[in-house]
Image 1 (tube, rainbow, N blue to C red):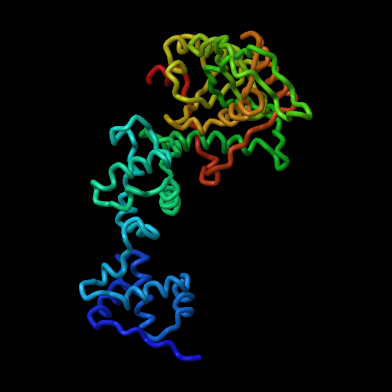
Image 2 (spheres, rainbow, N blue to C red; image 1 turned 60 degrees about the vertical axis):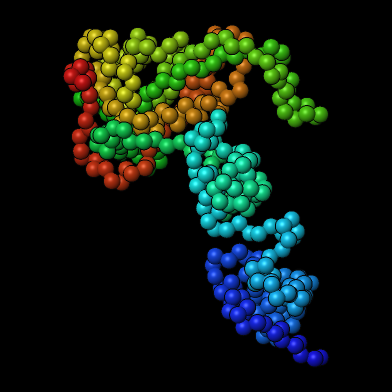
Length: 399
């Protein structure tokens, strides 16, 4: 076979082609076209060039022919470009992608739109409208899928919201340490098999509970009967219309030594409701024992009305408060999550009382085989010999 004849390049053109092929600012398509001509000038075959650059052999022939048929007025820029509307669009530059991502990292409402977050389509529409005036003409024709690919490659997801808990309590670390100390002291009350070691004849027995409220549980009735799964349709069928019957609040504690779940359902979760729960605990545990409760900083937990009640049972209750904005430290939150998945999700009732009865029924079922909740995170850093900083009524009053 005859060796391919090298393409004769104008010396000035060769210099410009080399600059274009090596510059990181050159669009990918333009750089490939420059490399086609340079490789052809080295005497490489059309098949070799196509394989080397990952393109079609016809593309090589096209650009070599275009260079050979150039006119004296043609520049390298004009030779390597295509007529507007012909062929593939020029690749989006790095600068244009940076601008696209900067817009994606802003909220639509900050740009005068109504939405809180972007969708790929709404972002593409905004770019197509404003790209030209920002100096990025190529983005005025960007597709929705093109926007998705650029964002996906940069791991930017402006349509998704992730929630976090900000540390707003100046004493966060010390309060968290105190709660973890409670859990650490609890851990030594269990043997290697996870069984609670009997209290024995201790002078002062301390019962430890994790407590919180779950307000706004909705009693919702259907307007038509549910249809159970059949061979024809394997899911529950339900009329989309519903009727609101009101809401209830669940006040609940988990005994961290026995796993027993203790409920109280009320229409609200005011101070008097919280006091009723404390009375429930007072009647449940032997008099003379201490009741230590891990709970959050809700105002009703330290209200004057609550303090008046605690004055009637001095020394009975001890409180360990979680840091503000750190309800996740409270073990009962895991129980509420479990309850939502197992029982409350999708629940429909005929009356508000039915909802209350079913909540109590759920607790009865749970307590048939109670689960003891254990905390393990960061407990290795806790000194078991430290003293828990509990708050009694007098300390609550001082706050």
